[in-house]
Amino acid sequence: MLPLWLKAVDYFLIQRPKEQIEVAVLLRNIAQHGIVISGQICETASRSVRFEQWQNRQLRQRQRTNYKRLWSQVPLIFVALQFIVIIIVIELFQLPKNRDQSNRNTFTRFIKRCLQCTENMESLSSTTKNRWDECSTTAKMLVECVEHYYAKRCEVVS
Image (cartoon, rainbow, N blue to C red; front, side, top):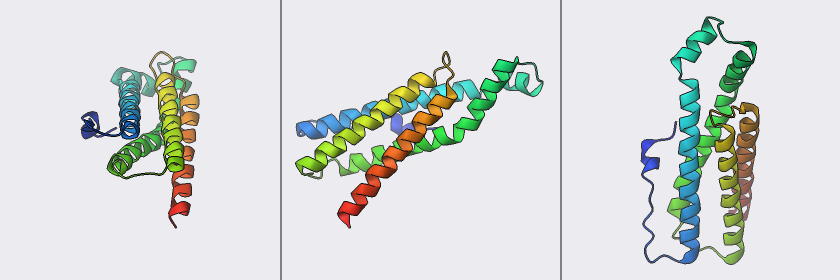
């Protein structure tokens, strides 16, 4: 789901201010979690044996409902992964720009919140847990957090 170039995100950080290094490391961690989430969902969803069993109604009731739940939650999780990519691209290009202290603190809290959401999504989407409703709720929180932050940021700029 995530582009291959995102796997190669390694921002040149030599002789950068401490704040820029911190943000770049947080963005890299978010990208790594996004890649893991994408891989886990693709692995779970693309098992052809599971899909054939589901079509032939050979799955047990719990497995069937869990598989349906996965497919119903994939669109929202995909939107959250798209937001992750957009955040990383935008903020890596914005990294060299100076921010005043209050904006920097707000931004760092925002990025840490995004990292927390991606960590939670990674643990909830693992093949051992299969908690797709909770993963979807966390993805929704991530989307709302991103929308809220950038809406506020646009109000300040205007």
